[in-house]
Image (cartoon, rainbow, N blue to C red; front, side, top):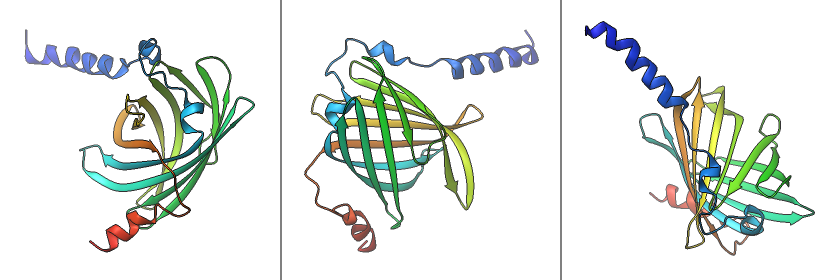
Length: 193
């Protein structure tokens, strides 16, 4: 077979591979069971990084989260501190709509977000506009959280545009007793070298 005949076949395989994805229901029955309301109620801290398409780390950050849960509504007040000193705040409000389903909104997310949790996994996909080099770019975020046996949560988010993964965000969450402005240590650490 000629080389040119293989090109459409290879292109089709790459497209099909890009469409294949894990479904959160694949994790049903896994342990430990991840109940986001139970886990995020109270104070939580996360340490994270943003990587570009090549895997190079572009930014590092901490997030301090205060969570409250009342009447099937989980509110997460998140304060971000980036390694360059920039701060940001996001407030998520999730309503439990079923045993495995949540409906969420956030101040910087366009519309409502459908989220699902099964076993030790939680997944949501949503549009998010992010400032990149002075330009606002709309990404589709594919956000996965996995509860670990040591009660930490690993969070991986693919940032996609036109179906291509252009960046990834990785975080590790831990339950902690947080003093106000405790995440200032990251900026102090960076300024001290």
